[in-house]
View 1 (tube, rainbow, N blue to C red):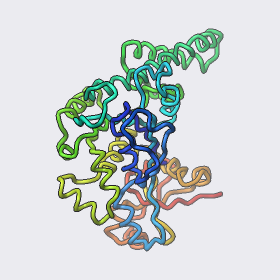
View 2 (view 1 turned 180 degrees about the horizontal axis):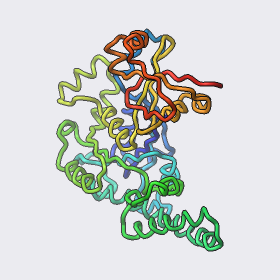
View 3 (view 1 turned 60 degrees about the horizontal axis):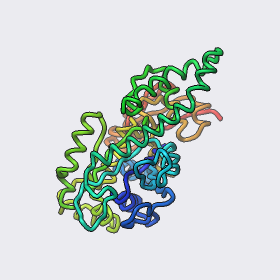
View 4 (view 1 turned 120 degrees about the vertical axis):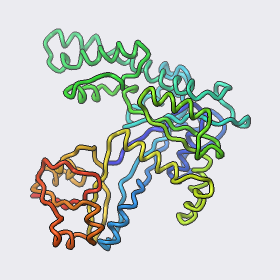
Length: 365
């Protein structure tokens, strides 16, 4: 399934530069003035996972198909976006479609790059973004509450379930707190998600630092790290300039470049890993002579739910899953040798898939 991550932030924080680098395209115009990204730019990137190529080599696969992540570069916002200022309406509408939001924050000093508020203060910048999302949510709830309250009083069961959750979210937002920290019971989570509140989206702070700070961070990124610790959020330190340079290099040259500046892996990898953790996702594989493919599913998925990712027929006609762990598949040298060693397990529809499982599904059409 991958996931769709919106890249947001104030103008001139490096959003489009980062987008171009991550997707290795030039579709997003990166320029030193507000609103250079008028329409959301969409790019898909393969999710790097060395396990997939290892499986393909053993299976002698004709094709290797990684799972993918979608990045959406969303037009920069300004204070008042929730009231339609700048490109507010477009901004808020595009955010609603995202699985997660990456707040790109300017954590570098450069007099040649204008800042919309004439200062470098990433904490304040993040608060502006957060405030606009919360204000839009308050406005949305205030418009919806009277109708839902009326239906609930008339005995409508769905409205009676929605109303207390909506009221709790409203009270939280009025206290200046985002909807995502609302405490929910298991049976309330689906209803809460259906409300599509903007401040309920999981967030990832992306600190865009100067090249010299890419491996260690700096004073600006440290303030965001402290903020993330308080909010139990995630932070990734990236230099958009370095990522832009990396995107122009051949694969063989990237490792040498990264090693030379003291960085273990590209920012894209770290961003994806953090996104996976943020959304509680995992990967399983299918492998064979025709293709080896990676599939992304929510952690805790059953075998039947995992089968859906390939095709709904696999889910509806599920018979069983034949499972080999990644480690055993690789160590033993493939499917047949794993079978011969008794390491292929037959699992039913309620089996909880583990990260790295190599699965062959049996199903009826």
